[in-house]
Image (tube, rainbow over all chains, first blue to last red; front, side, top):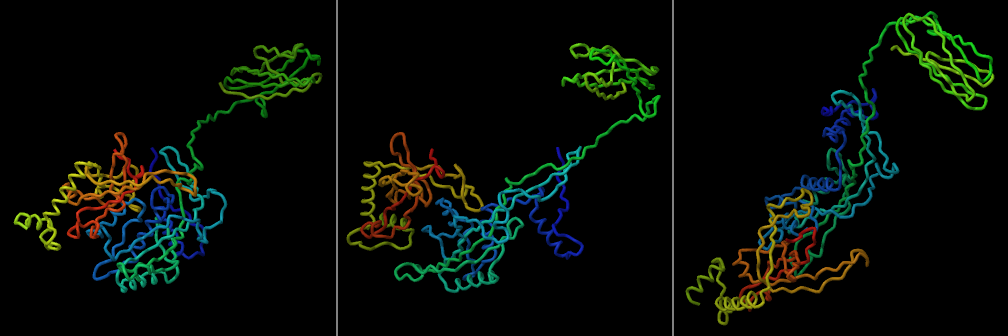
Length: 364
Length: 182
């Protein structure tokens, strides 16, 4: 089982010696907030997260008190499930099951459009993944690293209507003051899983049909339309790939040197050939001196003038006290080789083509 | 009005304010008689039996953003049988998207139920509850309450202007994602 991943300092782009330390510190702090979990990756941000972010924003920033009591905010984004609407309203309901005034409700427009946030719209085509972090891994035996890649978040514009329903003009004023103060810089921010998501106040509308009614119950309904410039981060799209693995390999090396009668080569081949005809017997004499039994493997390829080739492998065992040996082989009429024990070759046969050989040896 | 009637009457009104209007022509006794005759007809002769599935809003766990539940996630109180006068509208032939993806669904159901009956059963029908109506021996169709008709102040729901005596409950066909029945 792997050990829990350790959170290390993830590099922040643009850090240099000249950079203001406070700025870098703040950027690292922001990064820390969006990677609170142990996965190093940012959490998914989906529609419901942003809806919840808006609800929290309203609850936190638009608290107003009327006649000594705080105006209740309907705690959920209401949907088409009827019983659910009743469930969420019944705390504020009268004996007829109607909501008591005043109250504040948050309504999400069902249609979520592709975003207009200028920082992230239409910059990178396709859903290509980009490097996010390199994270060390350790499974108890092997140290390595994973490369985390994520695609560009999908920008979305989500429309909300925050509605205050009340019976007093003073409540309208207080609520309006709160909203305008909050959005005096055009936009405000809600924090969703460590990300600051901007919200823009689009317009304020009054539903005059109820406040100006002569024959029905009169109350004020004022709608504040907001657009949240959010983005979707889907962890299903994240890509985690192993980068490099560092393995501890242990190799035992024997330091003993093989002695040779020849400085440049362990083995010297002196080949003599037959009469140069195709059908011949070839002889090679080798000199060697080793202090341990070795096996020499010769690979011989003879290319004939007809385009055929003859492959032959000869394995020669040399004992400790053996210093030379003679090997022989023949090419017969069919261009096939016959090899005997202790034979090898490495010859050039002018009459039928070229021959090249290589050899290696193994300590047995 | 004799003594016993007066006691019952006061109990029914929770001892707040006795209703004495049109007392020259009508009384609680007359009203009780009418309701009794009506119940005999409705419960006995017609016998239109329905099943009420009340949503337990306390025990039902909902998601924290939308207050929704998944399939079969709603918790119910034990189902209760009750009687009412049932009217079902014609089926609706409609489409989901501009003339394609057609669907045919039952018309809405309207139930008239005596207040006294609900009080005796100790039940209340609320917005969003589910009601089953046995269409045939094999098939029960389920509806959800779209208007629980709690407000009964109008003339129609009052017996000769004396006191309200029944509720009209509007229901729409329940979809399978919200209630699959039993």
